Image (tube, rainbow over all chains, first blue to last red):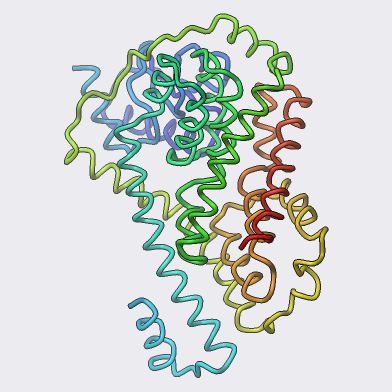
Length: 79
Length: 322
């Protein structure tokens, strides 16, 4: 699984990247967590709110999320 | 109620006299802090609820899919006002609009109003200047966005966008965003909305307290009419000077409004104060550097220059009629 956090390097984006890293560790997921800061690449996902959470190329959540919300998103996506 | 609480705490419990500068300053600080924090929380809450139901994607689809006969400037500016402004989202928003085929002028209308009218500014204005001045600020902020967007749209500035943005614009299409939040019931969304409102309050708490603290000190110690001699209405250059000084400044509204209130209380004309606020909140150097990613310097200068002129005009207008 490939998890990407899209963001141009603002505080909210950095916070989400860290939260995602923690949740992945906590749940023991086998996943690569990446940060995408290149604006042109970000725009390919057709999003207008940052940060954005992308799992395996699919946009799954937008905006600032708490650890609890990230967990919920993961559980929903993985099924 | 809050005033009674502040009076009781400062004069009865702390034992400070209401005639001394320190008593007046502490009272002002307590009263304003509590009032503004409560206001900010509720306004953030209301805006959070609105945004949960009108996400920006929906606005974009609305603007691209309908003929609006000029009203699109109004909708773009209005939405700029009610969506929370986050500098990290302004560039993706800009490109998202351009990509969706929304005209540059309409995009500018959104871009002008979005930082200018936001929950923090509105809460601070209601708390310090009252409803009438807040309404004037909000309405003129939206009008400024509409007029600015319209004029910039007429100037045919597309060639001054960055190259890659121009390419996006040529391949723009009114695609609808497939990804939707789904229909989560309101009751389930509410905790998240409350949480976000609280986050907004927490994020600016320190600035608010510092701003009100400075305001309180000046309130207690600076004599009435002190600034009048420097910045009175009959000084024709007061408005342009304060606006031009304010453009590069980046203070969030939280820190600057309480200080401005004291300036007004001590003799600065309200129009000069409002135009100063607009320039501080609406235009800033950090924003210009962000815009550099999607625009040439020339376009940024035209954009900032025109809005500065408009704000100066508004300052004179307010001074004349208020």
